[in-house]
Image (cartoon, rainbow, N blue to C red):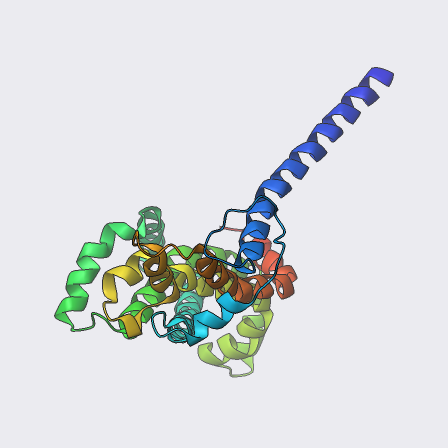
Amino acid sequence: MSGRKMRNGIRLAASYVTLILLCVAAVYPALWVIFGSLRPGKSLYSKTLIPEQFTFDHYIELFTSETYLFGTWYLNTLKIAVFSMLLGVLLTLLTSYAVSRFRFRGRKTALSGLLVLGMFPGFMSMIAIYLLLRELQLLDTHLALIIVYAAGAPLGGTFIAKGFLDTIPRSLDEAARIDGASNFLIFRRIILPLSKPMLTYMALTQFVGPWVDFIFAKLVLRTKENWTLAVGMWDMVSSNQNTNFTLFAAGAVLIALPITILFMFLQRLLVDGLTSGASKG
């Protein structure tokens, strides 16, 4: 028994040490960026983690500089992320509701198609999407990003949302139909109120994607006034002459702030939505 207790103690101690190391590896770079944004000068290098002097000049410069349109980029990204989230969540819910509640010809084929398409990385279709947007004269517009982001949402969220909807008893639908409710009324009055955890999960994931995306936004947006935060921040440090990394750190902190707040306040609903949706396929 003593040997088993010793082995369990060693295993537990090793687990705690591993968790502590992982925590330090995750938190230390974030603290370095936060303190770097408050450090005077342009270099992130410092002998100490906590700067000797604190300044908010970099945050002020982001919104007052004529070279960097950070405020415009922030509003552009917020608009694209919010509209992509609303439209993407709606499309994902309608798709998952249809395959969860109805049995129709081609249902299994549609699910298999979604599964196969979801396995391919999104950047493989960028050339084709670019050509389509050029033919539709949607290049350098925020509408192009919103359409593409929202249209791709069902590929990643349909199966998780379907698994969650499968846990809602069908007897509720049948009772509502006896009372004369239509499919749309059942969806609006029964399915949506019971899907709050899943809605939270889908909304957060669909918001974060457009908020931090760089590759597709860089491909579509050409005008500086139409750039998103990711494209603008890349331009801030892309040239050899521009090495204002403390200004870049301040922008990174402002980008991470809303996502961090959302995850902190909606963490319980996020976990419930993810685990409930993963319980069934």
